[in-house]
Amino acid sequence: MDKNHRITLEGKTLEYILTKTRRKTVGISVDVEMGVKVAAPKNISMKQIEEVILKNSKWIFEKLKDLEGKKQTQAEFKAEESFSYLGKEYTLAVIEINNKEKERVELEEQAQPVPLIKLYLHEHTQESIKKVLLNWYRQEASRIIKERLECIGEKTGLWPLSVAIKDQKSRFGSCSSKKNINLNWKLVMAPMEVIDYVVLHELCHLREMNHSKDFWNLVESFMVDYKERRRWLKEYGGYIRLI
Image 1 (cartoon, rainbow, N blue to C red):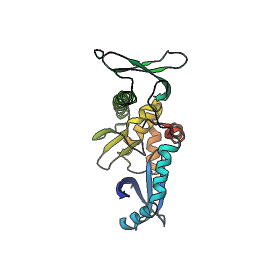
Image 2: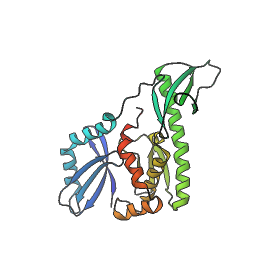
Image 3: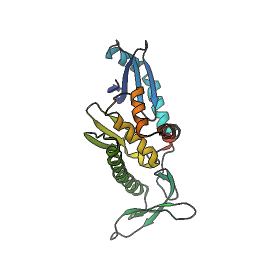
Image 4: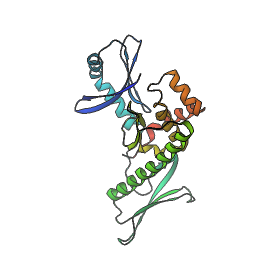
């Protein structure tokens, strides 16, 4: 059974998924979808597992940094920069308004040659652009992800005890043994079908707390094309970025 664990390395807290199998050695992998995974023999102690993780900590952090930075471009939060929303690229337009007007974000889908994310701001500064845009993304993520959870929950009959929308560094979702689900707000940048896949993935962990054949069969029973959606996440998930 997969279990979520934490270990402090170099002053940093590392979250990882531990799976006990019939293998003879400890294996470590880093994945944009599921984060850090550790596969270990059934009879090995946690102390031995942590020693292997510590020994490979430099490689682990390099892989995590690679996922966060190699494919990603740091946002500069300026006008005419490109941002993704629900899998579609938008150009940022910044409109300065007076203090009597309310700061807001609007989408202009029909703008030519490309659709726009329009920011109406009191100050045309990088700091104000970043603050308003990130708040908007988080609000949209909370609204959309919770809507999809409700829809998919009704379809599957799988309901978590709680749901939190978080800023997770190396994974898009997680499910604890206490039936609590965390989902990354940056998912709102991915296509809706990919959001649905991640939501379903975590809901299925409520029944199967592992990545066994039974787990993937359960996912497929509700989403026959999940492999295509998962492939998108593996190929393009690293490009989802803001900060």
